Amino acid sequence: MSGIAHRFIDVNGYNVFYREAGCAGAPKLLLLHGFPTSSHMFRELIPLLADKFHIVAPDLPGFGLSDMPDRRGFAYTFDALADVIDRFTEVIGFDRYAVYVFDYGAPTGFRLALKHPERIAAIVSQNGNAYEEGLSDGWNPIRHYWQAPTQANRDALRALLTKDTTKWQYTHGVPDASAVSPDGYALDDYFMARPGAHEVQLDLFGDYRSNVELYPAFQVYFREHQPKFLAVWGKNDPFFLPQGAEAFKRDIPLADVRFFDTGHFALETHAQPIATAIKDFLVR
Image (spheres, one colour):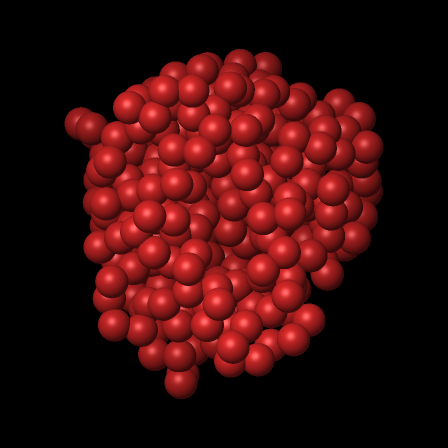
């Protein structure tokens, strides 16, 4: 972990934590994490890429060490998350960058691409979906909440916020679960136990519908701008199916799609080959 700086910065009045590594003059790479984790998920990937890129990995608002603003003054929507990260890139001087998107990081990063296509040098999507066919039946309880946003349906989603479920997200689809360090899901559980954290996550479950509604717009962006695109996908992901990865080639014919025999949190078991794929792809 030598050479990685751990910083806080004010963004629109919110304290955002981020990890930074690499040389300031190197090509810029923004890493965006997903649910229910933080930039900690990149702890093994960053050292493998820091010799080639200037890397920053922020914690989204409400996650990790970044501020978790009160819900009465901050709407936990993906538009709001993207606005904070958009401003974050401006504050730290990331004017043009490649973006690595995972899970919640995908609709956040794709919103940045829609708003500032000229800033996006390339996209690496690791189980970051943008197609209906990529959504598994595991989304059905959340879809039910979208269709009928009652308190009962909201409360039914609390089962997705338990320690057992978090661990399952990390280990499902991994051929050898002992290869997954407990550090990641233990830290996620720690942050999830903060007062109000469950309500924040339930708000985001509800707003995830806005991401699906934006899929057509994301796809238009892909077709019109043809960004340099790499998909590195845990093929056993219970939430985002391999069909979602393959679908990128429909709009970006030159997209490079690679599958790995692992689950949703592919970096827990395949950081080295994913880093190699990124270097090969972005340097090439």
